[in-house]
Image: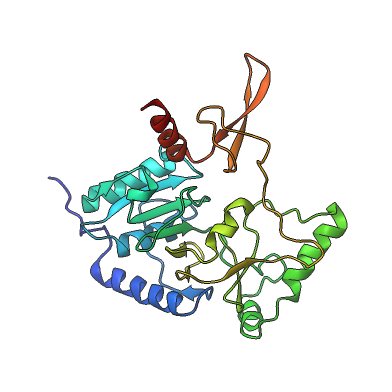
Length: 280
């Protein structure tokens, strides 16, 4: 006997509760809204927060794209797509511009997102103050008082120790000049894409039971000192070996046969699109 699932797996009551938390998160940009995270058929820490957001928002006419660290075909991305499509029947796409709903782990697509699109980012640790404050009650107080000297001190200590800010990913941002927010472990290269984005950005942490959001056209500024400005990863002197793209986030790879290092677009669908355009 074939098991029948409710549309988008979750029951309607659960979806309504998650949508209410999402609406509150949109109304207060950068604020972490607690929600009753449900048990999912994947282990916590593997994207349950983002998956619950996607399943609560998706409709029959949506076009879904799922990426994992830039790849549409990784194990995580393929497994997510199988679960979502099996319980909804929605169409999946690889091209960013064709998607209405994008779920991503650790990357923002290279092609700028448009109005009407929603991107859901999976988050393992939503609290940007957790590195120096273990108490949830205390972090709530610090956010309420806009007391972020600890976050600035962490950056200052990195500069004193390494002569530069050493955050490679999940660099904290100030949202709407009010809340310091963890942007999920996206590379610093992607942080500027959050600022004044035309798309709605939602972030979900299933294990930590938090949802937060960046509404369209919201100011998102990476924390930095005036004399030590924010510097994302630079790929100015490199180009993709496959499509020739420049000024995009690259993977550094090693060719064992030729004993050389080369670069390739991290966003696989972006790279493939460029290759198809060049061959046509």
